[in-house]
Length: 450
Ligand code: F0G
Image (tube, rainbow, N blue to C red):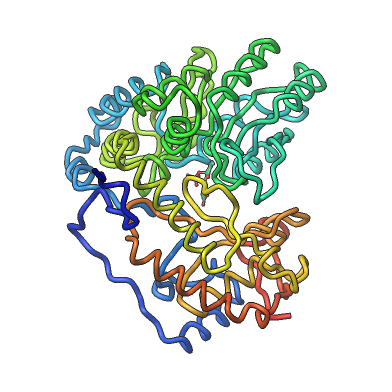
């Protein structure tokens, strides 16, 4: 007998109660919009984009339960009921004592940077997300990425893992300068690939040997737990919350952008076990975010986050979520679009270096494909290649999938658009930059066809 999940059609584990119109434009309107935007997709307006796959951050759809929870928001300045509820959920989930709400993930990163980092300090990671790296460097410290070395088409179950021999060598080399090891779950910059429990445990053991705290960047903690359940021997009968708890049991603390697996439009968390560390965090939090029981959020945002964190651990939701990303990758591959394999948790990453070999790296193949998908069908992705990271090895276009927002029909449409673009791929031209800021150039650079 077949169950819901054995069919080719993906049954979304929700039905739609409230809808939002999406803009459908004429091609010449898109041409005009792209011109005005300086061929930079970040400069497009919402009304100019049909399917927006720029990010999965803060773009999820809240459930009816979350919308109802908003009405319970307690806006008491200090000691609100909403914070008590969030604290209970996060404490149950992680077992970690000191829990602080923040307005989004990078606020937690900034608090860590201002309390634990400074010139000469080093942070070691499987791969730092770009805001994490920027906050570390802003404090004068060094961020070192130590991912296991995989190519985009190598298939392995846990391509987000930390390279353990390199981590050990770095812990020895940098000794007491190492402020923390920070493991990003899932590894966004490395294709949304997961980290295994075994790799996390071994990382913990190395941290213990060297007396260094282990933190998690837990933005996509639930998607990571799902992959552990599916792919790592011995976890297939575990409940997702138990896997989540086992991951956090290995950590001394975490940062979290709740705009991903928290399924809220704004919110984040910072947490730790150590009392003295918590005092430092609390003081910085008051300086920049607000009193520690609201941390830059309204009580209603905190209520929605408490509900969203639990919804993200629902096994049916996670099965649908990972199936829909895998379906997207399979569809793109079937029309000749090479993707990073295997499918990650939150996005597909198209290997534009392989798809458009006639476009040199300094003419940004990822940006060229991004512009072509926009012109053809109003789809917006984000280049992750030489434009975003000068000197980057890979030329990727990320199509991130917002949570619970698009249906299989929307994804089918994107695949059809991609098929048309592939049919004339040899005519796609690269870009050159005509104007760029001194840092983080991908956000505001202006480009012109080469
Ligand atoms: N850590 C990871 C792994 C992230 O992916 C992000 C954000 C952050 C931290 C920062 O969190 O945006 O709430 O301040 N990633 C988004 C993205 C922006 O598109 O991947 P934030």
